[in-house]
Length: 405
Ligand SMILES: Cc1ncc(COP(=O)(O)O)c(C=O)c1O
Image (cartoon, rainbow, N blue to C red; front, top):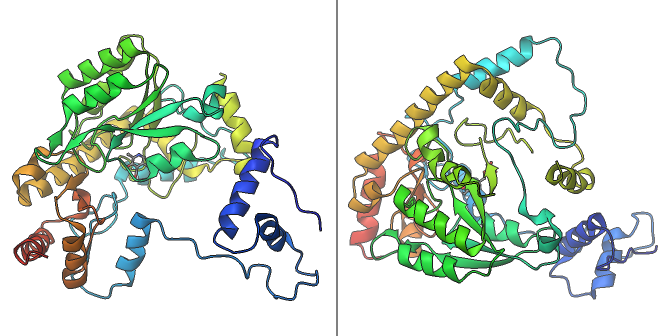
């Protein structure tokens, strides 16, 4: 059987298949072409080793999602999962918003709805927000651009930026100052000021993940002016709109400030958290046409349900207003958990996450002894707490800190 060569001149989809094959077979000892042929070998060919999947290596779990698997296996009745940024009720259960239930009911009752393929880019809600991905321009594809991300940032940011299709080189800019548990604004300005013109700067629109530290509006204005004067491209990741302050408008101010002065920017908007649609994925002129080229050989046609729920809520004034109230209630709950778990630095931070300052040894002590799950950098999701579980968390932090683990 002839194996396909995935040279640099092959098409993007060939290169993606090549990357996938390399990923699947990574870690085996045989030369790369052998590895490819062993995966592609037909089950009917005379392969003495048996299964064509024999050489596959176990891929590592995602650190955050893997923690949930460990949490699910833990039989302890007092276990607490603070690792994942998903909202939980006082009973520790996932919440489906009333507006989402109503929107789903409307969709079920609508007999004109059919199960046809969507357009490739899905239900593109351009009247509300636009989605775009930065890796589509030739300058980016040819690896001529750098993306600057905050130090630290959401663990997926560097992975997304260096994906084969994105091909961006990634640098970090100063953001968090552990000594003040606040923003290192001077370091941020210096690093952004040194970025070459045309670079992309990834900005968390609000409720920075993982630190929970945001610039003030005055600081945003300085960042905006500096980026404009240096010719840098802002790329806002807006994953928590409404969760920092409880208001969609207040949390959108940094982006609106950049747009108001006529600057172009890229925005990736998520409704996973603020509409509680974690499992309902949705997808997104010229940018759109490029996007289609990427999508067609990848997953071809987008999922419809989550996007339809969003469309119903965003286009119906009453449902929209009800959503803002439910969102405010979720944000208020998170803020109140923060107050109950009072520690000066926790109150100072905002949004879904908090950096506790616990080290990885203390975190593993808390998981082992107290069944409290969080990422090894000491980040906890405030949304995973309830009035009932705050005392348990406080006890476990106390034990971890006083035992000097
Ligand atoms: C900063 C940031 N961006 C994006 C996302 C992902 O959002 P979505 O669930 O829509 O993929 C997350 C969620 O974990 C996040 O923290």
